[in-house]
Image (cartoon, rainbow, N blue to C red; front, side):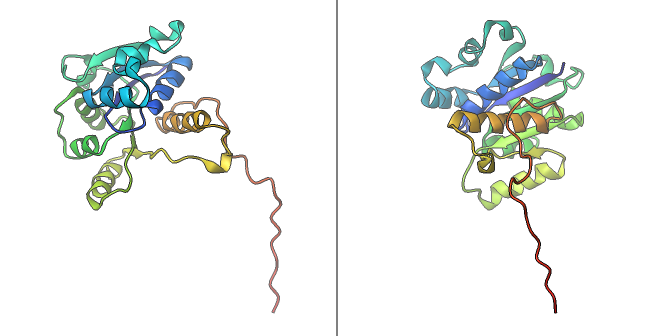
Length: 207
């Protein structure tokens, strides 16, 4: 099983992080979880006060999966994930704020999430960002392009309408599953595109 670092920044969409951590632990993977202060504030707004900390998010997991998650404070640089000598499969930042995008793009490792991302980059490990912003400014796009050119996977939380999800929850699970697959891991069992059900008839144009 893989050992994955998951960073939760302060962008909107904290439910996606909850879905991703749930999926990873259910699949048997181990998670190093870091949540920023801004993420705690956003989680309280979007999910309720009981989720306003990494401990609250962890408490929402089934008991059997909690021992697969290790929590770290974003202000602490002593955890193993702050060093390349700690063997990890890769890192997922979900959701990823534009401030976090800019910091990683310019090597600003001023907290544990950004330092862990810096380590992931220098060790050539998979780094997946789920940026949550709209619309993107030219500066946002420039930073995202810079990271993409370094090999970072940019996976915006775009709904898969063509799969006709039956609920918001199902749509969120598909987005989280795609982010996990982008890490190079076997994806969770969610609906996938199997091709059109309609027969496409090509007309031959005769002259």
